[in-house]
Image (cartoon, rainbow, N blue to C red; front, side):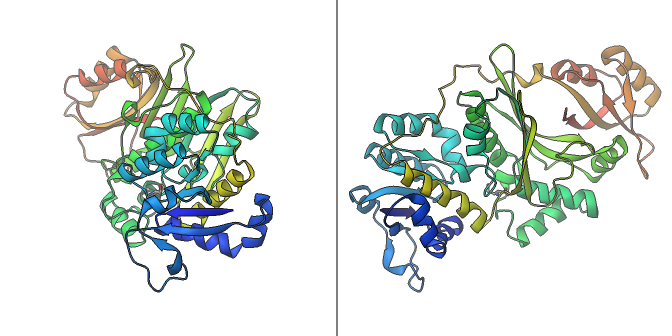
Length: 412
Ligand code: HSE
């Protein structure tokens, strides 16, 4: 059997290397006589590379070669990836991808085409890199009704927050270090502003609850505005700040899906997930809480997940796996302001007693927090849980309170 790899970047090159490093066992597990990479598509030249003789620049060579049954897409981005993957599926080839943006935006459509063509569209590597999570949700946990998923799904932001918590580095210092170590992209927007984690929770939500979640429908907030004072208040409250991607099924058929920094209590299983590690916590009605933990990025961990999908696709040629989800109606994702949560608030005031009294009148009792070295006019507190919109209205209307930071409290 022949496969092609599109995109010879970090993950694509890892895929080609892994297929040859563990070649014999991969062939055996694929239940094929052979499994070879025939083409590697990339617009760049790699003259000295061990795979130089497989390099091509014309996508149509892959599309039109009947010997190619499985194509690995590790190009990233959506424009070309979407066009190429759609054409390949329509041509009856199975596709394996690590591209979370592609799956989050076009997963429903591409899975539907795969179904029609009786081929496979697999994406284990799109969430959590090397952490097995797609198959566990769709196979191992299949007997459960999943109620909620909460995850630390972005290694870069988790590294930055860990440095802020353990070494008191500022956000800018920690981001610079993450870039130096190659964790964060030069343009760190997708990581730092939560878009990468958003794409991943969209995929996990679709798999768990059966309907596509489009990234633009998800309230997505990043970690740019977190200050060391917030980290200190979280500690005095009894926890840490983590970027949490969350999806929860509601009784009315809607889902709550958000990506936002949250106070996470020390006793939560997610509180001790540090550095570039990822973790996904799943609440099943039969299993209770299950946590998956490991490296969410990196060349070989991600290649490991991609090649596992190649093996699976090789074992299921012309046999679409029962795997997918439906499209979602408008308003499938509920208004995040209606969801119940507690809020942490930091601000300034010239009259703390009056502000606390006003808050008590509007939103009920609040728990006042303290930290060493706080300026005289600084105030910080945590509310009781209530509808987020109602809490925000009450806080905004508390006279004399100048709000500087609001962070949700995780119910984990
Ligand atoms: N940049 C991502 C992260 C890895 O930091 O987790 C790929 O999704």
